[in-house]
Length: 435
Image (tube, rainbow, N blue to C red; front, side, top):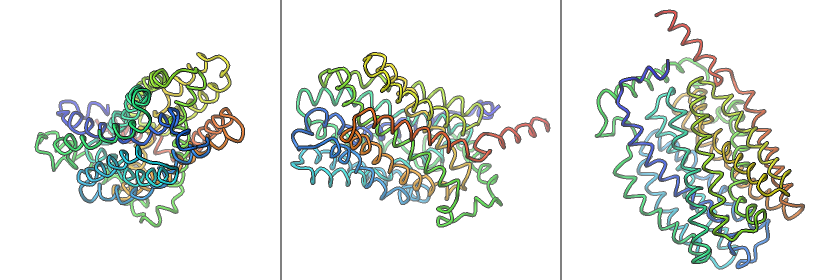
């Protein structure tokens, strides 16, 4: 029934909004994670980095990442996310290039921190743009298509970074991929619009449909206590902290996995960097499938809670089994592919929940707070794996990541019933009875 509501409405929003949003984050994700290939390709030896130091260098990005989370989200809700993101593209592209010129660990840590600052507001800003363009019935799929930037970036980054490192050295992987970011400006500005009212290409029918559906969503939240929560009270809201914990566990697992995958594959298969690059792309093909399937199930049932929880626990199990079978290279690799299937699947459904729990302005702020604090997991994941690998072995580090995914699963299952589609099903039953 949800899909029938938009039958006959033009679909221009899917072609004009999703592709530029994806492209921006493909390059952003590439520039933050290519350090994993640089480390595996000789950066650690050139700069005298231990496994712990490598984890710190990879993870300090996420400390800087906190800085612009709430300002970026609020600017997207109240001002122009388009202009804000354009400025950050220039900043992070320049800093990515500078990463290839570092001479010591201190310089690397400073630049990685500043790169995190530059990229910090992009994710919540883009999610807010999507919430302006896609009603609740479409939001799971819209988020999923946008978040497909992560596996696509990983598929591109693996072979490309592996080739660059093998052919031109680890420094050029930063310089070449950083320069690509600047080219994004020529795609971002012509294509993206902050809201339907700003777009020249949109038909009146499509514009009226989007705006009426979004108006209905906001009206449904009026009069509820959650809609009156200030930013200060938001930070004392139990559901807010549940979302932060869930997202932090998710980030610990995913960034720990993504940044150490090249090193794990090199150790597992004893391949050269070109081979590691090609092998690392395979799990992310499964990621595209996982995103699509779980987003479809989530939008069809409106059970956001369940289809966030299932891939969290499945990802943790596959991580654990990849270590259990490490002596059988291809069985272990098969479970790493399984990790890829569930790798980003929780994210598309997770980000549909803030608008269900908070009114629009507070939902925008909540995205920034959740993404900022949750992405501390992006620091903890790589650092924990590096630290525990130094202290024990890589298996202990991976088991720890799996444990955090289990915690994320358990907390997800405690979220309110409205995130399980209970209210939606009830309202649909009433409307069907009225018909």
